[in-house]
Every structure is written in structure tokens, then in C-alpha cells.
Length: 437
Image (cartoon, rainbow, N blue to C red; front, side):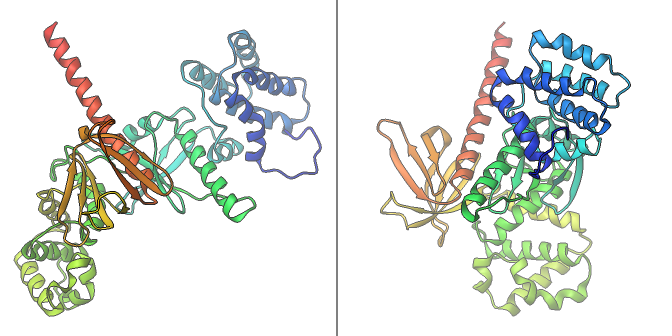
């Protein structure tokens, strides 16, 4: 609040951390924080200090409520200062925090920046896989699931099921937990990243991050059923997997898809046909580029492109999705790992995770080496360098051990699919009980 002279320069976030972190961790400090802020604002003739005090109180009311014993006095403090710009908003936030679970972490940089500008509305940029972005309003009490619903509604998606929010930092892409508060999630991940970077490089660091909204679970995805979802998410999310050569497909399928992808690039501009040899990496799976000569690819792609006359770019994207939808590996997430358990498998295997379960694939021949439905995976765990799972029963099961830096992603994806099936089963049981009644 500026009342106490100090030579040490600290950022506003460092100060709000010092004030609020103990109270988010220990309930016993919460009343003390309310009392200190209100006391320091009472009979204070320094206008700057009082304004800073209101900003602190605004943050405080959104994080946690005071105890019942202090609640009456806090309300009275706010009600007798109605003329103050932030008073009514503080009162509203206080009422809201009484109905909700307290926040687990101190305010995020975005919240502190917003209130320092005297803005009580906070907006955050959300990125989409088709290289577009949109700004959405996010409140202190917004949970991840609320934001997912809001984004789905604004984009006019048929359903929010299977979509998730992700944070992309310098070295990781992390899925956010639906039930967490949005700003707690951001804070937790930026704190982790700061800690890791500080340990590596030393000194203080600013963590840059992007928030993405993408499809995470691929169930009930039928191309053509939800055009918006197909164009914004399904096409841009599936295309890189196709070009990396993860799917098994025939030469005819590859030529047809290459012609569609060429149309997406150039639309109806036939003068670009001569560029096909230079564009092959964007049209054909990487491991199949040498299946034909550049000239053969060009001839075959051009002939199919000319047959698709009148097809729009949007229709070509839908055509791509409809072509790959027929394959077992549509919607899979793929991971290249080093396995140390199965002597009959190559050292490096490709693991595909989908609604069907977990499939182990030979990375060169693409032959399926083993398939494990989720109900056959007894348990799984991950660390920064590994992913382990037990197939069969916990007692007599066989262990499958992998070395990978993406174990956290595999762990999270399996957990999410299993939780989805458990929710579905509970919903069916509830419906059956109602029918029986």
C-alpha cells in the first residue's frame, strides 16, 4: 500500500504473494489478512495508499471469505463505503466466495495486472489449433469446466464433450484439470516452470505461456456431424499425425488425400500444379515420400486434383477427415518410447492411445504388436523420464516399462479416458435405476 518506506524494490506479484500465500495455505491467517487491510484503510488520508488497499481487498474477496465471526464486520466495512469504486464489486465477490470453495493459490499475474488498471473484468486469450485465437472473459471464480462450456457455446460447437484446455510452456504442453479454478491452474504451472528454470539457469525468470483449447478425447467424433469442430479442431489436429506417417494407408488413399491437401493449399489455382514436387512433404506421409518418384507423385496428384473440380477448401478438409475416419488409428495420440520389458518387440515402439485403449505398434512396419483395452490395464504411473503400466491383474499382471519424457501425457490421457468410461457407466446405472423405480 506504500505506507511503509522500503529500499527493496519488489514487483506487485511478489508483494501479493507475501500477503496472500500464507492465507491460501492456512485458513487461520485469512481473518488476519482481512483485518490488516481494513485497519490500514481506516482513517487513512493517503489517497494512493487507500486505492492500493481497495485493490488488495478486491483480490482478497475473490480468494477466500472471512470467518463467520468477521463476516458481519467485513460486510459493514464495505456497505458504509458505497461511494468507493470497488466497494460494491468487493461485496459481490465476497458473497460469491461464501458459496464457493476457496482458491488454493495466490492471485495470478493477470489478476494483479487487471486490478492495478482498475479493471474488474479480466480477459484472457485462448488459442485454437487452426492458428486462430479469441479473447474470453475469465473471472476469479471461473473453473476450467466453466470456460470449456463458454468457449464451446461461443464457437457454436454441438457439444463440449472431449474438449480440454491446455497450457503450452517452453518445454511442455499440459492438460488442465476440469474441476480446478482457471487462475489456480495457470499459477500452479507457471510456478512449476519458474522453479524448474530457476534450478537450471539460476536467478528469477518470467514464464511465457499460451492457453490452447483442443480436442483431447476422441469419442463420438464423426466427420460432418459438427462442421465447426471439424474445421477448427479435427482437421488441424489430425493432419500432422497423417503427415508423420502414423497411419497404415494404401497408395490410392494417399494420392486421393494428397490431391485434397493440395486443393486446401492452392484452392482452384491450377497454375500451382508445377509446384507439387516442392510441396510433397505437406501432401504425403513422410515415410512414403519415396514410394513413387517426384514425377509420378505429381502426375497422380494432378490427375486426382482435376477430377475433384468444384470442390471448395472446406469440402476438401471434410474429405480429408472422412478418408482417415475409416482407419482404426483415427483420433489416436501417438508416442514413440523405448521399451525394456518385451524381448520380442523392437527397442523403440510406437504407443497409440485412443477410446479403444492402448495399442503397441512397430514404428517401421506399423504392425500391431499388442492391444490392451483400458479394463485390462490394472495400473499405470509416470515420471519425468518414464511410463510404467501393469497389464492384467495387479497380482499376476505383466509389467510394461518405457523410457520417455512424455510419460505425464500418456498418464493423463489414459486417466481421462478411464474417467470418461466410469462417468458413462454411472450415468447408465442412474438411468436404469430410474426406469426400475
